[in-house]
Image (cartoon, rainbow, N blue to C red; front, side, top):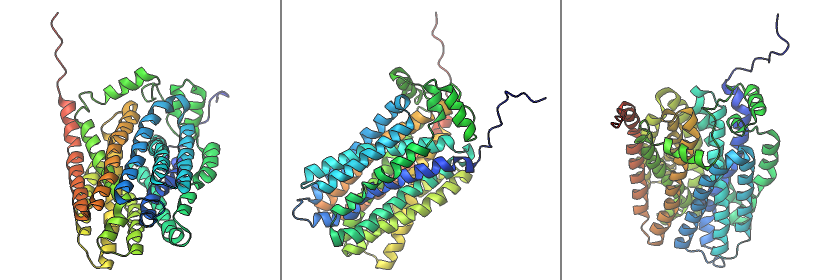
Length: 444
C-alpha cells in the first residue's frame, strides 16, 4: 500500500533538466559578451571622433577601468550572494552594466566615458561567475564541461552582435547608438530572469529555507542539498572557504589555476579590446579590422562546442593546455601581414582556441575541489584571473600608443604559452598534494 504522504519521485537528472536555467543564463551572458565587445567594435570610430578626445593610451586605460570594475564586481558578488541570493544579484548585475552603457552613450569626454565603463564592469564582473555557478550546479556531473561550453557560446554570440552593431550603426549614425543598444538587457533580460530563473538550492539550503531548497531540487531533478554541499554564510565561513583552497590536496593546484586564469583572461580581454585597432595599425582597412572581431567571436562559438564535448571525453585540463598552445601559434601568425583571406582563416581558428582555453580552466576546478569548496574555488579562480583582464587592455593600449603592435602580438602569445604551462601542471600538483603525509602530532 502506497503512503499518501510520499512525495513523487523527482525527474531524472539529465541534460534536459538544466535547459531552462541554461537558456536564461545564456541570454544574460549574451548581453555580457555584447557589452564587453562593444568597446573594441567602436574604438576605431571613437579614436576618429575629435570631439571626444580619446587617444590610444587613454583608450587602453579605460579598457582597464572596465576590467578593474569587473574584478571588484566578481569579488563582491561572492560575498553577497549567500545573503541576497543568486537570482537578485544576477538581476542587479544586468541592470548595472545596462546603466553603465547608458552613461557611455551620453559621455562627452574620456573621464565620464571611463566612469560608465567602470560601472558596466561592476555588473559584468558579477554576472559571469554567477551564471557559471548556476549552470554547473544544475547540470549533470558528467555534462559539466559541455554545459559550460554551451553557456559560453552566448558570450561570443554577443560579441558577434556587438561587432554587427559596430559595423552597421557606428559608420552611419555614430558610435553612441551602439552603446544605447547596450541598454536593451535591462528591458529584455531582467523581466525574464525575475519571472523564470530559479534560486540555487544550495543557497536556499544555506539560508535555512529547506522547503524551497528541496522544492527546487526536486523540480529540476537535482539531489537535495546537504550541509556539506551548501555554501556557508557569514564572513567567518567565507574566510574558512578560502583557507580550504590551500589544504594539502589543493594548495599547489590553486595558484596554478589562478595563473592559468590570469593568462587566459589577459588574452581574452586584451585581444577583444585591441584586435581591430592592432589589425588596422598592421595595414588592414577599417571595415576589415572590425570584421576580424566578428570572425574571432564566430570561432569562439564553434570552439566552445568543440571544447565542451572534447573535455567531457579527454578532460578539461588536457583540452585547456592544448588550446592555449594553439592560441599562441595563432596570435603569432597574426603578427605577419598575410593575405586577407588567409588572415580571416587564422583569426577564426585562433577564436576557436582562444576563448575556450580559458573556459576549460573554469571546468578544471571540478577536478580539484570537492562539492562544498567548488563555488569558492571557482569564484577565486575567476576573481584572481580578472587581474589579467585588467592588465590585457592596458598592455594593448601601451603597445598601440607606441606603435609597437608587433610586440603586442608577441606578448599575448607568450601569455598563451604560460597559461598552458600552468594548467598542465594542475593534475600533478593535485596528486602531489593528496600524497602529502599528514603532519606528525606534536609531542605532549
